[in-house]
Length: 136
Length: 489
Image 1 (cartoon, helix red, strand yellow):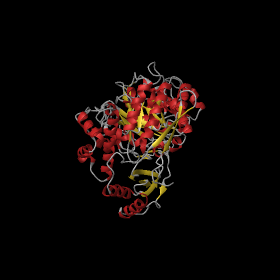
Image 2 (image 1 turned 90 degrees about the horizontal axis):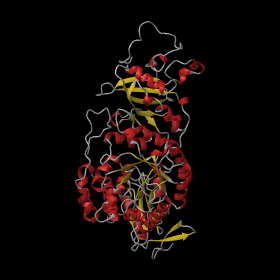
Image 3 (image 1 turned 120 degrees about the horizontal axis):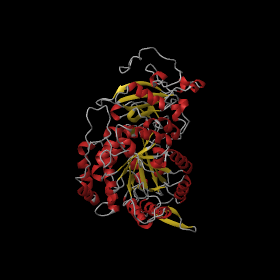
Image 4 (image 1 turned 180 degrees about the vertical axis):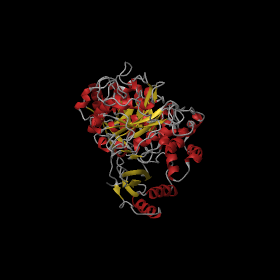
């Protein structure tokens, strides 16, 4: 399966040149760019591991692309990696864009568990299958 | 001095409280020198007096009949601080290019209104006065609410920011589709449409306004099968998915029962129709905040009073009331789709939903500055006759903080529902990517779509199927401050 979280999962995987355009967009908007990774792509897993602190005062995409390279050297092909842009202006103070820039080579997907509790109603539980080769 | 103001009739003024009938303008409802206070609620009406009725007197009558007055002098006014409680018409302007119609600006003291009640507000402002015989027609065009009054309302239960955080979806419009046919599907068949559309790439599916609990599908069946579809689509994609379960029902108790069941099944969102009434809407908004559920409002019925320019209530007023009342989603027009929506007016509605402050923008139909005092933002929904081939126009006109609903444009796809959903999602993502990368959507939109379709067969088919579909009609309801009616797209 293919996890389709983020802004651009229905497009062909982004090249570095593609990623650079979106990073520059964030910088031009005054947003802080953040690199995060995880081995648990559950849609309600909010807090992915931060690769470093968000880049608050960067004026150019180049240093962020270097950080992304460094992150990929460790986690590339084994974990999910995402970039996000954070807007600190009043009324937002939240993520304004988020997209995947790395995936495990094999995406094992999710287990959907149906808990029957009497009657017709079912309580659904979603759990990400463990990624191959990724330790917790 | 107002150009329309006439001198008082000769013969001198009679005593203000002498019994009998007196012109409204003489009773204190016309005060051209009044300076509206920051704490006043302001309204602007389009007034069309009967032939021979003086426009100032007509405007003063609107102020009177929407506040303290009745048709004759009453001595009991003198038991009150009546100067304070009288609404004051302070300005009357002729409507540009519309002989016989006037904009009447009226100020209402804050103490005339119960805090936090749209029912009370609307009972005053649009209660009796719209049937007043000396007027041919009357339309409430816009209102200004002071911050002190705004703060008595909850506002959107969830708001755009927290909705996005809860769904984990940022930086692009959300995608939805209304299940079709609107009526007749069984619960089991209905859930099939939901599953295909969500699995194919939509974020939401939606019940239509008139799907409640009919013989062919009782509401519990729909909820059970829809939530099976939602859970399965989440597992297939790793994304949070939602379906707007319509909890509109005959009584408030029924609505709470349905909403509680939706929440118990794990739905992130429920929906109601505008026809449930302002009080029920506010009750559901409080329920939604209490229960961490997003509240979608379908504006069913609004065109009966918003569409015609001469008489009724402008949709911009309804949008303001609904942001106060506390819904999270509101249908606010598409510009390019099948339903009424002048581009400049629609821009005004979207600004009312999403901005912290609306400055006067007569070209967008906004007559007053409005501070929203940190009330949550309300997500506008574009729905009705839109398809993937219009994606560049939609994003250019409506921005990214909205829901784009492609009903027929998803379910009518030649290769099926999931393919239709995928076509829309690919078109959307390609367009957002291109916009962020600095491309000009107006000039290059068509090319961006065609390039995206090279790697997506369903998008290619969608573009081919609907390439010539446009709804190019001139709008009925247009701003008065542009020289000519705005052409359709």
